[in-house]
Structures are given as structure tokens and as C-alpha cells.
Image (cartoon, rainbow, N blue to C red):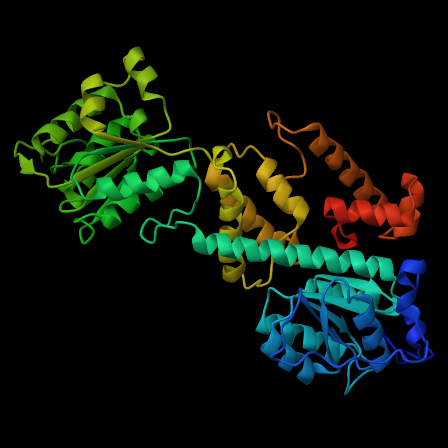
Length: 498
């Protein structure tokens, strides 16, 4: 963790590489007789608290770190890549403090970077903190880009180390809670609908019930709430799942062509009809027809769809033969059909025939912690697709995700996470990566949240102005360095986020 060997001609550092700040951290620089390295706990020992692995080939520095972190975690030790990987496989520590200069090449960072890569290959959830000298800053930034959680410049400040370890352990705890929640949450294996809020659980129960019937279903909800996924879920759980699933967006087809698209046409039925063509209803025979945006269907076509629903027969455009249609119909719309019925743009008899069963999907903003559950699910999927394993959200990003109103619902969340995975440069995605740095109009925030957002913005600007130099930023903000570190910890900020 602490560099204790010559780097590019620098004199070898001693155990005094720690920079004690006050009496509370004087142990970090202790050189008193009797300050000896303790043996790591045996594998079968009862471990109290989280595990932190210190990887450094300097015995004295490992002993100091063990002493310094004793109140926060159980510390285990390794002196090279091989022993570090053995400890990780055997004990699965939550945090690793990694010195970049390791044998057999202690004068270069390559062995340390290789160790970082091997650690994250074994367990991407481990938080790795890099220790680097001032002239290794670029290498440390490379390590952060490769998946390290953060880095500390030597000589290490004991106060800063303590804050960073606490933040790592808190994040590990939150991620563990998320995984446990994900295991306990009801995720319908057929529908693929993820959620634990009462509203979405009610939807999943309704989907399972209605799937066993042949009744027409009307799915209502704002754009982007997952109406087509719900329709597909009904089909996949029904007795018709071996048959075709045919979807048509009624708003995307001109009125003059919609009837032909649905019912098909005979050769010569109209100009350009050079061959006979089956419509979507015939194509869905034996399966399910999904009519998306049914609220945009003109009344002339509504009449013909009503007849189809009543008689289970159709006639192609320009044809005189009545054809049977063994099709289950599911429709969806984001429009207010009650208002449309009052205005005469949606037939009442068609509405009642279509909505034997009605399912309403809740907007994302009303789904509570499901928002973060979905965000984590999308992050896992898109990071795997783009081969960017080990990505996570910063605390700031998670707050922004929960606070945003999501007018585009799940579709908007999915798009923002996908873009952040592709364009983000850090292993921790920020609110800026998600394009959620501004509170959207209409978003309800408390005074405390507004104050924290202002503090976060001012600290970020000060750190950016001084290229991450905390002392200079603290002077600009009129606070002490310890106060600024406390604020950064409370607000979930790191110097790598500026």
C-alpha cells in the first residue's frame, strides 16, 4: 500500500511514509519498540467485522496499516501477487489496499497493475484502493480507469485513509443489500418484469391470471412503462405460446393503409395491390395479436375490428370470402380512452369488447426503490454487453436516479444507463454520466436535499478549479481540510469525480 522502495531515483521511504495529522492518528507513524507485525488470523478463525487485505512487500508498512485499521476492520496481509490472490480466494475481503510496486518488479507499476486486473477478474465487487507516489499519479489514474475504486498519494494521510475505507465499506454493504434484495424480490421468470413495489406485484399477479384465459386484454399506462413487455408476458404464459406473436403499432401506419395491414387484401383491391396479401390478423392465427397504441385507430377501422372480435372472422380488403380468425387480442395505449369516448373518437362498444380485462402499469416515478433495482439491472446487462465489467453507481448518481421524475419511464432509464455505460470514463458512473446533474422541473426535493446539492456543486467546482487539490479547494470554500473531507464523505464525492 505504502511505497517503500526507490522510484525513479527517489530515496527509499521509511515507515514514516505515513503523515500523522493529530494525536488520534499518531499510531500510524509509530516506530516504538515492540511495534511488531501480527500474524493474520487462521482460515478457520471467527472474523469480526469486514475484511481488508493489505498488499505491500514492506513488513513495517503492513504492520502500521493493520494497526491503523484495527478499529474499522479485520486486516489480512500479502506481500506479492500470488499471496494476494490466495488470500482473496480463501477469504473474499471487501477492500484491498494495493501498492503498485510489487516484486519481482518493485521499481515499475506493471506488477501492481497486473495484480489489480487479477483481483477484479476473481471478484469485480472488491473495492481496490491504489497507493501511489506523486510521480505515479498518471499510473494511479490508469489504475482507476482499469477498475480501482480510488487512489491515495504518498505520504498517506491517516485521516484520509480512514474516510476512504469507511466509504468503501459502506458501498460494499449497500451492494450486498442490493444483491440480497434482488434475490428476495419477486421477479417473474416468464414476464421478465422486475420489481418489488405493491403496484408492480399486483400487475405480475394479474398477468399470470389473465394468461390462462382467452379474454381480450387492454393494457394502459404512460409511454415507456413496459406495455409491450406485459403483452409478451401474457402470450408467453398462455396456451398459445407455441403460436405466433404478432405486434403492430397502430399509430405508425397511415389510416389509408391500416385496414389493409390488419386484414390483408386481395389482388387488385386497390392501386398497387399486385398480389394477394395476408394481414396481421391472419399471420397471428393460433397465437396472439398485439395492437399497440389502439387509441390512435380511426373509427372506420374500429368498426371492422369490433366485428372481428365479436364473430372471430375477417374479410380481406377487396375480398368476399369470410375467413375464420383464431387469434387472441391484446391492446395497449397511453391515451385516456374515457375522454376519447366522450369526444366520440373511440367507440364505446369497441372499448367494452376490447377491455374485458384491464391492466394498468404504474409510472416509474411511483415505484419507489424499484427505480434503483431497475437501474442496477440495466447496468449489469449493458456493462456485460459492452465488456465493461465492474461498473457501479456513485452515491450521487443513485440519489439523482431516485430523485428524477422519469417522464419517459423505464425506456428513458434504460437509454440513460446504456449511454452512461458506453460514454462514461470512470468505473463509477456519476450523475453527470447519466445526464442527471440538474433537478428537473416539478421534482419535489426537501430543503436538506437542495442544500446538499448546492454544497456538492460548490465542492465539485472548487476541486475542479484546483485540479483535485483538497487544501486549495478548502481555502476557497472557507473550511478546513478535515471539514472538507467530512463533507465529501457525507455527500458521496471523490476527487476522481471532478
